Amino acid sequence: MTSLVEQLRHRLVVSCQAYPGEPMRDPDTMRRVALAAARGGAAGIRAQGLDDIAAIRTAVDLPLIGLWKDGDDDVFITPTLGHAVAVARAGAHVVALDGTCRPRPDGLTLAETIAAVHERTGALVMADCSTLDEGVAAAHAGADLVGTTLAGYTAYTTRGEGPDLELVARLAAAVDVPVLAEGRIHTPAQAAQALRAGAWAVVVGTAITHPATITGWFASAVADATAEA
Image 1 (cartoon, rainbow, N blue to C red):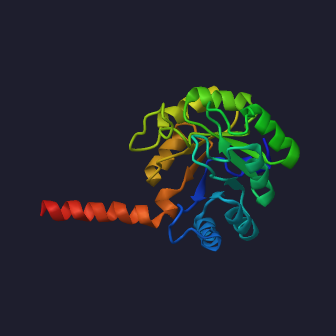
Image 2: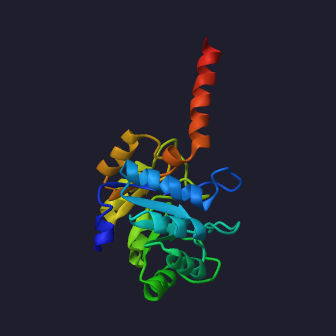
């Protein structure tokens, strides 16, 4: 176990990402968001895009999980080895990539991709998975960490209202690598539940770093209350 991964044990990782076309879709803005997350107690940062990764790496002295969303295919989270190497060279300590069973655009297997990332960059690899079988396979393929990031976001999984705590628990019991709970963790209570389920660390994005969605939650609640009045 590396000291970097140990820093994340039972701690919070904040995902600092903005969707295309949004006002906050800017590397310097994400750098500032990451700084705010660090001040609030985050133990690590997850970031998307080479420019964002580079900007955050220079400003925040925390473990940095990087990814590159690209393409319209099912596999779009750091979809190829080329993407993965670029993410590491941009400054990510950990490269997050699609860890599902779906074919990768460059034709490489997950194991081949992970081995090449390790060899060429020295970075760790986090496999974003959607099922127990995928998480187990990713760990066997050499992933240093496994995340529940894609649970409910593949065609063959069902999305619930909150995090997939059952998957977190089953993965934690099945693999020897750290399991990061990620996806639809919207409250501090849910984050705590994920840790109790066996997560090594908890990744929270939308509920901390996406003002449009958070505003929408409040606006909807206010509208519902007005309708009931």
